[in-house]
Image 1 (cartoon, rainbow, N blue to C red):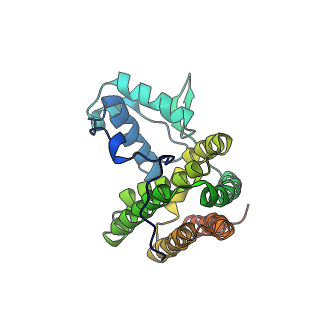
Image 2 (image 1 turned 90 degrees about the vertical axis):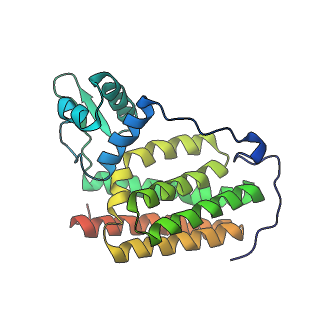
Image 3 (image 1 turned 60 degrees about the horizontal axis):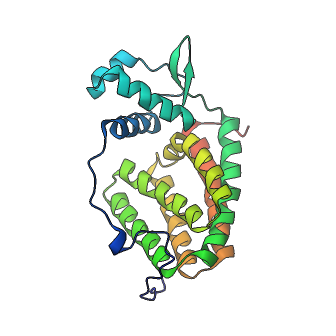
Length: 238
C-alpha cells in the first residue's frame, strides 16, 4: 500500500491532537443502550421475540427506567418495535428486507466511496487506515464483536468523509437496522476471511484516492454480504 504523506490539514473531519478531550465515563443510559444493542446484534435477543423487561433488568443489573429509555433509542434505530400491548419486540427482518436493504446500502456506500476519495484530507485517510489496522488486530485475535464494531465504524467513516449530510442520514438509518444481518455474515471462518479481503481492497483504493475503484469494491462487498448471510441462514433468493 502507498505510504501517506505526513500532513494534517485543518479541514479534517477527525479530531486533531488539540481537539482531543479526556475520555468520559459512559453514562448508565449509554451503557444500557450499547449492551442491549449488542445482544440484538449477536442474536441473544432474536428477531420477532418480545423483550422481557424484568428478566433483562435482572441480567443487566438495572431498573426498568434506564432499560425503557434504552429501548426507545433502539426503536429509533429500527432494531426494536414498541407496542402498547406487547411491550418491546425485536424487529423482524424478512429475507426480502435483508436483500432490499443491502442493495440500497451498497449503492449508498459506493457513492460515498467515490466522494470520499475526492473530499477527504490526508489526515482523514490516515485515521481510517489506522482503524483498519486495529480491526485486523481484532480479526487476528478472533474478537468478533470488537472487529465488527470497527468494521462498521470504517463503513461509517467512508460516508462521513463524503461530506454529504443527506447521504449520511440515509446511511445511518439503514446501517442501524441491518447490523444483526451484517454480523451474521461473518459467522463462518472462510466468509469472515473473504470480508477482510474486501476491506483490504477498500483501504488500498482509499490510499490511492481511486474513487471509482473504492465505489466498486464497496458495492461488491455489500453484494457478497448478502451471499454470506444467505448461506449462513440457509435462505433462498427472495
